Amino acid sequence: MSRISNERMAKAMEQLETITPEDYEKVMALANIVKPLRSVLHKTPDDYGMTDWEDIYFQSDDGVPLEGWYIPAKGGESNKLIIFNHALPMCRAGFPGHLGAPWNQFDAVEIDFVIQMKHLTDAGYNVIAYDIRNHGNSGAANGGLSGIGRWEWRDCVGVKKYVDKHPRFSKMKVGLYSQCMGGNSQYEAIARKPELFENVSCMCSPMVVSMSAIFDAFSEIYGVRQYQELIDLELLKMGAFVADEMTPQLFASKVTMPVLMVQVHDDEWTRNPVDAQKTFDLLGSEEKELFWIRDTTKRFKDGYNYFGRNPEKIISFFDKHMK
Image (cartoon, rainbow, N blue to C red; front, side):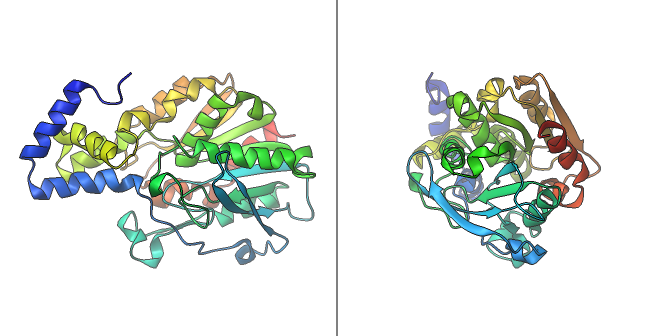
């Protein structure tokens, strides 16, 4: 199947000739979402008294160097391990929007993933958290672009191979906490390497999203919704994937482990719960739950921080499936 049809390409070329400079700037701002900012590691496990941690480093399946943390369970290493995959444009520590430019252009809030790791270690789980390519302290690849999972799945494969070869980690039960881009990546990794993930107990999958939903919502906000074809053309020109290629829905049917999806129902970044519901419906899991975060529109402030503030739902999910 062509990445962009002849009809859409022709329409995009027409749009390119007639679009105003002001609207073109908005189109490029949307397309440039796939050029992720590197978020700084503004917190470490030390900030929450998790002092018995260590730096780790390993390679993605295609050789990109990745860096992360290993944090053992409180009171001593357990036999249960959670692999933590973060979102764009974040890092293993979260998102430093509260530090101002350039991160506050997404949202001027702090997202704290380290407190979530604290909840997990307090509950008896060891944690591996790492920076996906082009994020945090991990290596650059693919021209610095994000595929919103379409390249990053190789990182999910790399961390699982690292765990499986490790003398201690390989003996642990494994669960996944894979959110947004990290969740999209995880779905494709499972689809491409099912044998590698056969022994994974379960996955918590917050905030996975299709880029077409984000582009549709924000182009409406910016007043350029008529330029979806041009957004795709600009993505192609920079070497990225087009919108319809950047979705977990292409791979959701191959995910068969127990899954807890978590989504903001009235998410201002998608403006419609249909995308999340479709992804959930496509999951191949017999045991799955879609938990809606309600009474907010804030994806960054309330969606990504939900586990940090409300650990009970997610901890009980892992406890159920990782006994």
